[in-house]
Length: 308
Picture 1 (cartoon, helix red, strand yellow):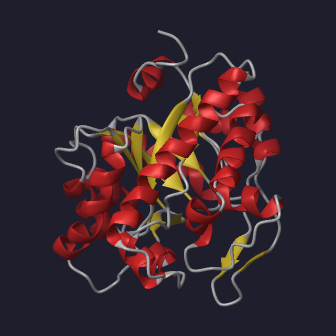
Picture 2 (spheres, rainbow, N blue to C red):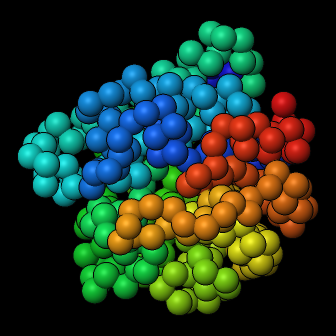
């Protein structure tokens, strides 16, 4: 099996630890791109696809094995608000996967030989609202309504051929239930990752209950947390292992806090590469970073885990 055709990600998780990339938005901002827009990084899928490739490539070169696509905030509804037709929105969703694949090709052309995977990002309903509600959940929608929101773009992303669907930054067990229903029959594996506060989802449900939803979902190859404080990770890993027996995915923020009103990060970073070995000992198998975690930190994680 060559790096051009990597083994399924589930097989890699059974064999060892896989390094995820870091925050797409901070990497784009560091390159000078303005993301003060409701579409966030998804806007650049249309306007600067080359910048998205460069961001993915920076993480691959830093030691990431998995690129998470720039589709977190890419939805039919969000694009429609900007006058983008449904057909064009579907094209941009597909493009998000193609751009990550292009970055992998360029990484291999530069001499990287280890397997590289692409995870298609599926953000929560609150990401489309662009009002910080992905850190609260409880949108007032039923599970069926949330499933109807998520299924169309999941179908498009799955058809684009990613290695895995990243159901990420999920604040609410109800939305997780909707996503788990929406991925059925797509013939693409997925991971389910909550954003949490302490031992609960952002909506306040105990993690035991939240993780249990995925325990018997054959489509789900990993469960865990992302877009949370680093200090919340270890308990979540322990809980996920105990409740599901599945590999665990973790990619916390830097430790700074997002101020939705000011649309800015506040506080200081508390993320260190030394933490990740403890997460691995506890059961984490996909480890990386989310907001405000850049290529330098991912390189440190890869060195700490011995994957480079």
